[in-house]
Image (cartoon, rainbow, N blue to C red; front, side, top):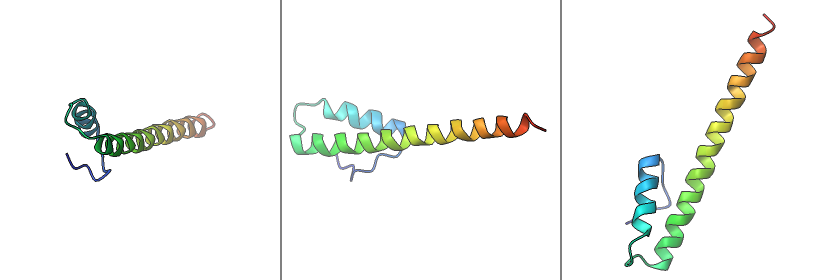
Length: 65
């Protein structure tokens, strides 16, 4: 499975995680997939933080009008 360290959505992340469970996957490939999953989770979490901060700013701005 070639991910090129490029997991961009939850479906791909779940597939990559499941793929890592097979016996025939080399340690090198597991490390590559693990790093790609960590990067995906980092970006996904940052996106959630940005959404929450935007909502909070919208609520605070509208409460004074």
